[in-house]
Image 1 (tube, helix red, strand yellow):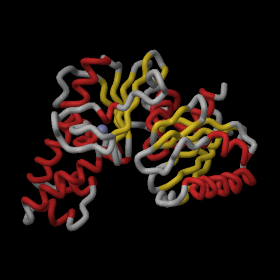
Image 2 (tube, protein in one colour):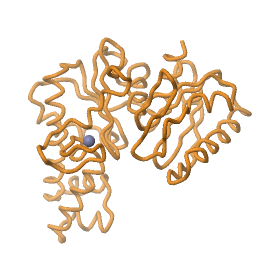
Image 3 (spheres, helix red, strand yellow):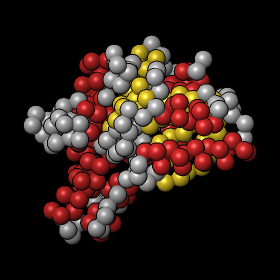
Image 4 (tube, helix red, strand yellow):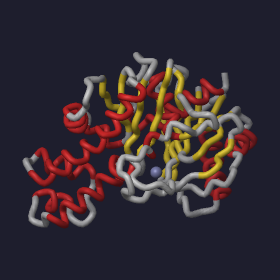
Length: 301
Ligand SMILES: [Zn+2]
């Protein structure tokens, strides 16, 4: 068995996964990312040791946000975690005495879909994980394309608006500033401020979520419909560009919002310039852990 660890800005998820990538059991601990990185890693080691007392796993895969050097096992930096050239793979391996490898979380999710999910039937796919940002993954001939230094493929930082909204990466107008779930929530808030009497405003209240806009639209709210029209137009802008550049066999949309399935996909599909296969992640919430387990298998072979 394999231990797959999915590090996020809010929670760290641990999953014991079988050799054919079935999730046996999972656990979650809070990241508390304002702390020193050593404290965060100590908590991870403690949880992994607890799991090790109960389950036998012979390798560990970790997916984490940031610029990750998988070959050397080093986390250079991340927007929402205090990495500073952190040798994460060696720290976990030495503490648990189990071979360990790490990868960027979007790369791990892509591996998960390629080996165990919606991408199994394809060799060339583009995966977009919509969340706090837009995680990207490009698979060419069955392998993730990671660029010359190992952390390329950042599809969320393609610029779609000249001089547009500032992005934490230092550029302006990045795709993720318009197509992430964070961006959708901002767009919902703007619509609520402009239409305080709408059904969307009633459902969303002070702190609306992405789910609220889908349920308001379902109940016939024209404001919610307009928000989703605009949001799916933004998503389609990126997909149309990637179609022209990569001509993949399929696009896969991941992240919690992908649970909306056709409510999300149908309006994107209408806006695609060329017909292509558009799917949601089949691993859903487990994609990070299962993807990390696949990373362990592929990298430690
Ligand atoms: Zn950016």
